[in-house]
Length: 197
Image (cartoon, rainbow, N blue to C red; front, side, top):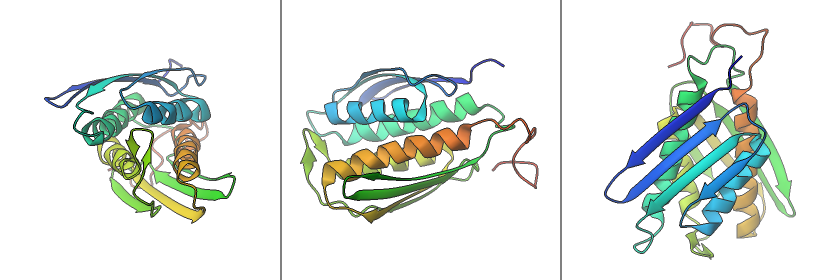
């Protein structure tokens, strides 16, 4: 079976982004964004999800990082959706609860074709390098909307901002890996109604 690959470009007056993802990769990444912390988080998605991920992004970060972060979430969501194709044989559901020191975060998703987003991380507003903490929510909301994913993110424990955001990206990667995995026993669409939307 051929690898499931998505390649999406988005160019606006605010950003220019190209994302290529191989859902059946080995965790290799090549990430270039103007926000170093976000680049590091995208590397986490690749490594811990086992996806091959290439990202080239420029944006108006001299204003702030919002446009670049949101558009990256959107483009990644579209690339995953494209790579899934008809979605036949996928697990569909994925979840992961992961710790990082005092932080514990749960991410659950359904690749249902019906986007919904719940964010219960309650992060303080602060910066990690040049990255505003509230942009983590912006990234995942963009992904859920564009990727047509029902995505829930919940903090169970923790207070260290870096730990909470990093373990969220790692848990997201694990949940996405599970949801996109192929199960040869499933065969068709993982839905009793015969469609995902």
